Image (cartoon, rainbow, N blue to C red; front, top):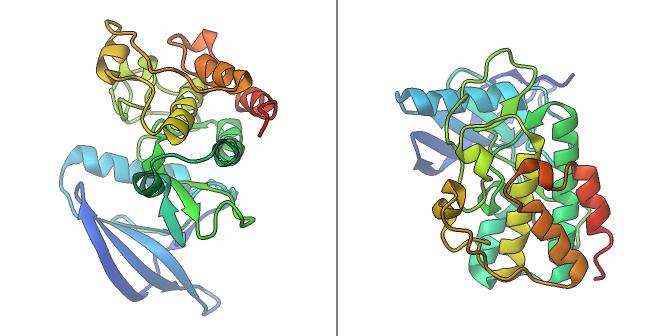
Length: 264
């Protein structure tokens, strides 16, 4: 099992910004063998208990994860988390700039994301906050071999933990969270697959699938934008976005199978 090292001295750092009680730094740490490693540092500033719980949760969950499509924690202390630096940009920044992406790129994006989700779900981890802001695109994507990387595990559920610190909460982003998560249900891998379907819709169409996301989640507005084709694509997205988890695509592997049938 992978385990991050204790937090070493910082060799250099540049403040990227502060948000939600956390400072974000681009810096370098010195590894035990003496080499420098470029990292993103999250530093806890807030005394707010909810912010601190999310910070602690992200460190706890990512400590044991090691997958090419999942952010890698390399050092940890009570106040700081250091992740491998990802040269590139978030999917949100790309969509802000070009609005949508071609079908072939969207299919490739979801294929790579599903690889990470299949790994996470096999480890008993449900991310619970899949959205364009939390998907990083490496420089040169999609031409480079490096896949997209899923980041920000502050809302994640871990089946190996005896207690879920977010139990019963409605945490998530309305445009991408499923109805059961809105009701406080956690730990169901099908929730991530719903969010992955909503993310693909957003990437291809230029906006999330429901014009009134909160109304959809609460159950009093079922209005949905038209699902894009071709037919295999519309079937995948429509099934992923069904209200009841039992009616959706059940596993990341099954979604991958459906994805590979889309002509691009």
